[in-house]
Image: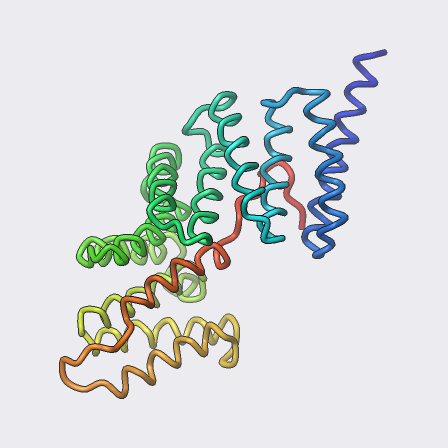
Length: 274
């Protein structure tokens, strides 16, 4: 009888977790926070601090803190989750790698680009080993790492990695689907910025034009992302000869600082909701 009651309690905690996610999706963040606290405390008591359900709840609770801009709290939460997942699941488990990627996104949002790069390297090596070098989520991380290479002035390495990601997207999704896949569009835009930094204006225009076509298809011409690419193309039209654009390198810094806002935090796989 006690076992049956305990099992029912865990089921209820799972429902509370789902309710927290639902509140979060609908921007009812205060209500979501109350549900997460309830579920997390219950899981810790019923299953222990390093049970997968407890860690998944803590991970999603950390995502909520990120949505609320509570960056100190979310970093502490993610680090606790990461240590627990490493102990319970191993450093190369997909759930662990999702948390590693979340920490990388958090560091990017905080402007801690070196730390973000380290997290993405960890996530990349793990995904290549677990999923393979040709998996689409592997290419997402390759594209993000290219940005950090560009910021450090490693333009040849950045271009090689961007091209790897772009070709991978087209192979995995098909050219038509890749042309409207947001990570592929960000990759194409960053390739354009890279060409700008190298004073290769014709290829920069080609890359930005391809990115613009995709953004307009996805968002329409008046969306901020579409407008940003149009601004880049207008600036390129004003450039002649080998003259480089002012502030091009700063564009990479801007892309990196916005990365945390653009990328989607990894939610626990077992508790997704529509």
